[in-house]
Length: 273
Image (cartoon, rainbow, N blue to C red; front, side, top):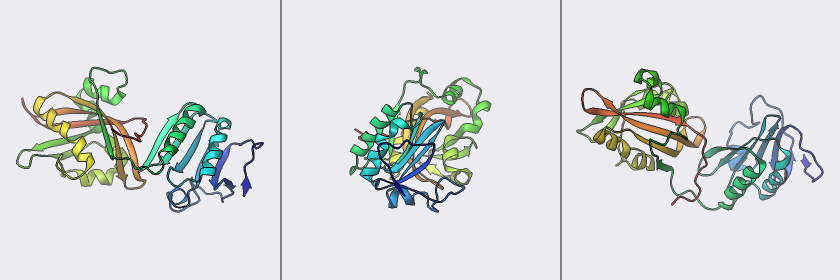
């Protein structure tokens, strides 16, 4: 083990920090020399730094990381190569990208100032004006402009069940946003299941109501969502995406909705209104 001092230049490579000490760990074929990828962060409070010619990665648990290790990373951030990806656990794993050490420092300090507080909601939904296309993700724009056949593999299809006042998933494209996050096994199990805003979860309570609006009006609905999702392999992850909901028609009246989403970069809200 080697303690960092102010005269040390940080070379390209992988760094693990434990209570201000740089650990020398055995080489492995994967990213971590641990069988459980959460273990070093959420149990031991370690910090991970990967410094390469093409950019740098910093990973830690906001609540568990040692303050000395964090201070060292902040002190040496200017020595690392931009751009920066920070991966942190705060009520779920999140991934954010920054172009400069100054931007990364501000965000890391903001995150650490939130220690001891929990995020109040697992889902944030921001409705957006469908006429404002400057920040619209390419797939969302394509859903508005292209023939249905060109985006079907990226869509989730829901049919409205009037007897139960719910929406039932009838099809899921293999490249749909949720399928990318949850995997094909999830997709196979999800088809035939129903969703309703009356279910006891933030996700259904906040994300499903626009389905009813589109079914009633026949007008597409566009928003931005950041949701804490329990994935099969990665545990709980914050998943940011843009989404467009459009009427699914069979004849003159909508019989359900199509949902097209694209994962996008985002910043996890720390103090929701």
